[in-house]
Amino acid sequence: MAVKEIFILGNPKLYEVSEDFIREESETILDLARDLHDTLMAFRKEHNAGRAIAAPQIGVMKRVIYMFIDKPVVFINPVICDKSDEMIELWDECMSFPGLLVKVKRHKSIRIKYKDENWNDKEEFLSGDLSELLQHEYDHLDGILAVQRSIDEHSLAFKKQAAV
Image 1: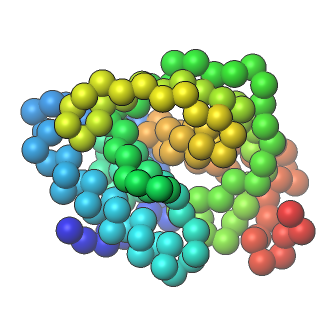
Image 2 (image 1 turned 60 degrees about the vertical axis):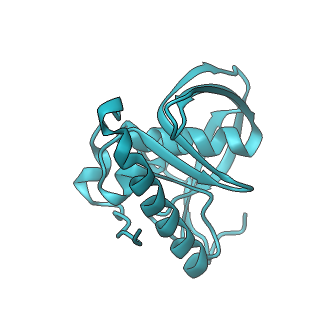
């Protein structure tokens, strides 16, 4: 469909909580998924980074996440139902503040339930970097940015200058 503008840190829309995507809107999910795909691929080409994007990052205030690693996956109305007690600490980056790293703590593993683009119920157990990735994108649906989850005031660094 089209490459959309990615909202950048400071845009008040990034702090809004998204609404559920309702079944009556399901005919629009493929268009939204294409927009998210095109936007993610354009970002990858320019920044050599990006594995997933949440709909609010392009101004669509719906609970939809698009991930493309080996294949495209559309998470509609995802719900994180289980989180491990074990946490991981990592430098997180975001398409809404390219070049900035934020040190955060995330759950080492999660279980997530969602609808796919055909409105089928799905459930995934994710661990490690995929767990972290989906937690990051899920936060976008709740209007939370990684900078709000920084471990402390020393947990921000520009990628070009960071020794991480």
